[in-house]
Length: 196
Image (cartoon, rainbow, N blue to C red; front, side, top):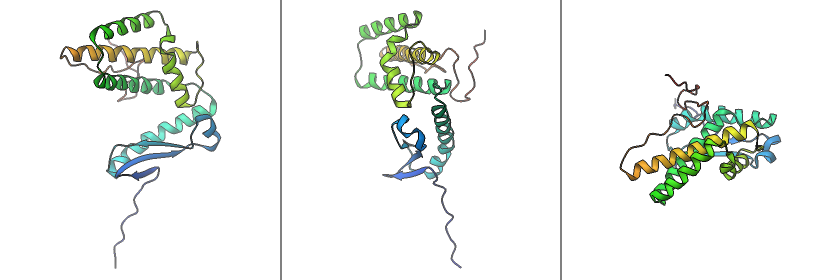
């Protein structure tokens, strides 16, 4: 008797160029709103087992995104936190490729601090517009979502500037636990509480 190989569970997974990708169809009713038919994300692994481990969290996340989009609701606090973290990492990567001088960092940090102190989310207008387009939502200026996202993006920018300044002086920098006032711990997905 010939032993059969067990069938591999590759639901929502696709292998391309020796890497696994998460591939989630966008519900038909949301395709025009979200501007795409599929969500395709690299899982950055050649291992099926690793890809399977990452799939559940991504599937859950995108189900929530689709439900929110169907109801026309603004971004969730977790989406705002994830967006800010991506912005922070993107800025640090950009600084590594094209390092700004210390004077430019200080000026940008000062302007960003002033915008945060004055609740001037307009300093993040272009980033907010890009997020809205990417997520397939409308974020109205003056709304709570606009304010929360603006605060998170400006905080991410400021933390990246501080991190780059430390790197210029040979000091290590630690990414913040959260970028929003209500902060969500990305490891536990629980609200961050500050102790005295």
